[in-house]
Length: 175
Image 1: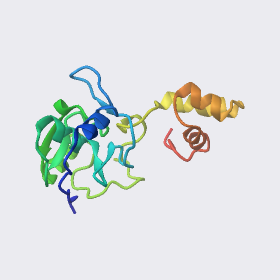
Image 2: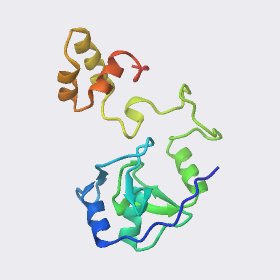
Image 3: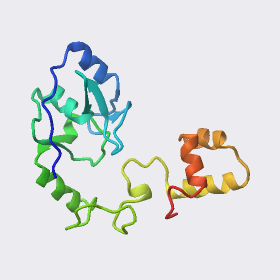
């Protein structure tokens, strides 16, 4: 069932300034990463007017001046935390699903991608991945040799929890 979007709250200048302070702006063509809270899906999460709103919807509102309403904010870059308005456009749920299939983010005809499905994106194919398969192998090797979680998390720029889960084989199981 498609997600129902609520009307976005009015933004004050201080809300807009706070929003911009949480976006890592780079060159005009590159992704502008959301640097604050994220939903489990990887999309930026902005709190305003008592609501938790996808950051891309706020970016669209600020840049284009209109509330996306019932439409989805689509990412041409396929990068959920991106807030670059040049990468954002409006579309329907059907358009969003068609793009997922076209870009191999979901198998055609598949309603939900099961965690164990061979077509599910894993590892480096996940657009929010912070590590490569080679780095995961290196973490496991160094952890087996006794290197601390802290040293590994510092070396690879990830949390100690992630290092632990990698070392225990709870994530990146396919590597």
